[in-house]
Length: 177
Image (tube, rainbow, N blue to C red):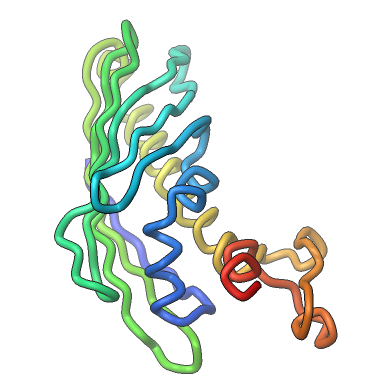
């Protein structure tokens, strides 16, 4: 299963690069992620609980970063085993392009595969689920960096940004404090 998309993130490219390497950001962005530990150099270990159709499973697995060309591109690869439910593995080639004015274009190409009981659910269910997971990950990532699209849902900004009445993503707040 293959898919791709492009998003514009209202943040400088170096901030977007730092966010995609941060295990706390990754944990917040992966739907169903309950734990994430490790480093960009050695990879991350993750635990993710998801329900795909009638099958609910907790996947334990690894996420590795490769082809790192700071701050332009990298590959995120993950593989998880969900016991009797089977396995899931996939990767995303991510490209970051500086669009100027503090905007970064994030383009991703995702490839996903499943096996075991999950594979028996049929390609329509699996393809829809994989697309939903990828979209949710990158939506969560965009909100972590630039703040939610609904400003009312955002936590109050602190310091200078608060005096301007602006709300920021939690990663921006963390980096700027």
